[in-house]
Image (cartoon, rainbow, N blue to C red; front, top):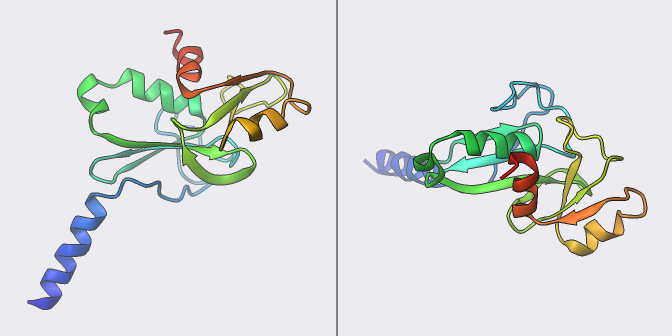
Amino acid sequence: MRTYLGALFFILVACTASGPTPINFGADPCAHCRMTITDKKFASELVSYTGKALKFDSPECLIGYYYQTSVESHTRITSIWVSNFNKPGELIDAKSASYLRSSELHSPMGLNVAAFVNNQEASAMLERYPGMILNFDSVVKLATGR
């Protein structure tokens, strides 16, 4: 009985996870464009209320997927994550991240947007990658034209 309850507890905890899961670079396909996710600087992830993680090769693929799904599906998303450009492969909260758009960044799908933990980190990259600092809503507008 104790083993059964322990197993049930772990199943329930797994189903309510809202954090990101590791991306298997070089093997996991993008849920939107189906390209293999290889660039750790631009990967992203959506996590559903059941804990299912959908992985993407770039923020614009994540946004494209999100806006092509039904409104009902949006309420089932518990978190959105993007790679921290300064620590490739480390996923950070997409909505609170700061973004830098620069033609010098060369992201997988061509929007050339990289995510950073905050405005200071994004601004520090302007000398190397001249461009614009954006917030998540601005990146959504760029990616969707909305």
